[in-house]
Image 1 (spheres, rainbow, N blue to C red):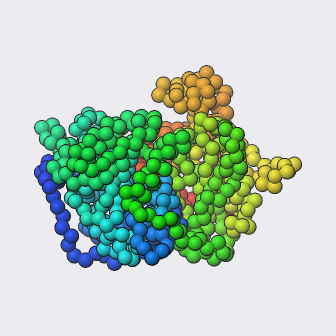
Image 2 (tube, rainbow, N blue to C red):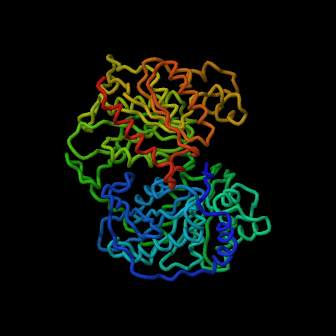
Image 3 (cartoon, one colour):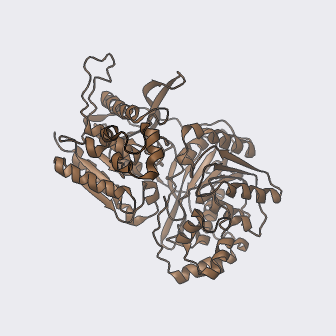
Length: 590
């Protein structure tokens, strides 16, 4: 879902931007001016996603705003490596350098590539041409500091997802130096291909409204497929075959345009994939291997990854406080193969013991992993002094909600059992979920969860009770959803039933019905511009009836998903509020 928040730019200014400026956009060439800013790493803890990342490097100052990028640079082997400039999407109005793209950043790291994830001005801040100006400035900054960043300035690729692909394609029309490849994921390139469709509508909400007689012109001039400049580079266009927002024809049409200029272009269709790669399920993740191999082939030679060594000692350096892929559970998959669940762990400075927060991603119970959807909360928790654990869990349809609940309980027990190793206080553990995992988190909290003394597994002897729960825009009532036709396929997938045919089963897994007295304190966080806001209000009323201590934190006008809140300063207050609430609850003596 994208935000429909309107820009502070007036309609008249938008009209001028959309008609006059965009008409000349494809022919506009911005010359480099002045020296690049110095390379200063302002956050030595990086981006809390990939250990060793150089965090918060300002590459441009404009109109009182500082624009930053994060960079990951492999250890030097005496040669410069190719680099990838990553451009997040978000419907032109939301997102940031740590939202929507974390899986991609992990994949690029694994492939041995340097990468640079870039913030830019969104539609509510500046016209479309300014966003491309920003990306061009980021590219110049990277090339200017190529030696320090151990990056070959002439072996760069652009990678854009969602509307970031649109911006990357517009940037190519300026013939930027050093760019040798383009990867797009769920991109939009021709707003006129479906002028009444979702992407054209979202674009006009971002940069319009356009007068009726100028609308087609504005959409035409903002479509890179219609650019008069023929500069193209080898391209890999990845697209979900089931995408209803940006139709697969967008990537197919873009590849025809690229090929007409003499450059190769491959369309990689993800079977039944909906919009956005972060929403694709594990069985659809073959695109990730193809993306890495394609980039290595087109930017070759690419040396093997050389990752900075993580300090596992008692006082780790600030750049390596995130430990990746720690195992917390073994299980057997549907093929009878042994597999594992893993977590990422952030350890604060100091000896501890620290209060702990277990973070659980959403994704409709079927998609996502420990770095999707939830990354905007990592830094606020870290800065507030919490140890945090972002976990994977088993997904539908291979496994059901009861299995997922069991995975959350196992994660809690694992963290508590290893309190000394992680330097956390086992009596101060909170659970944080969002969307689908908001339901899971509250459901775990609503159910008594003592240790199992007779278990041969020492981890299972631990209690899985938590001392506080935060739920972002969770699903709390499957019963009411069963009355709506639009949710029938989801309910059939989750429960094997449609409609209200199995009310008792729906109630058992709905926190609105399963909640009871004695639950730990709850914080409900919800945007007011989405359908789950109504469920949050009913959940709050139920907690009042049960005398469960709780608070509700509404985010006025915000849509579903904290990633979609990025880029909106008016919504960022939630980060401090959530951290303050957790500090208060986990400091209480119980």
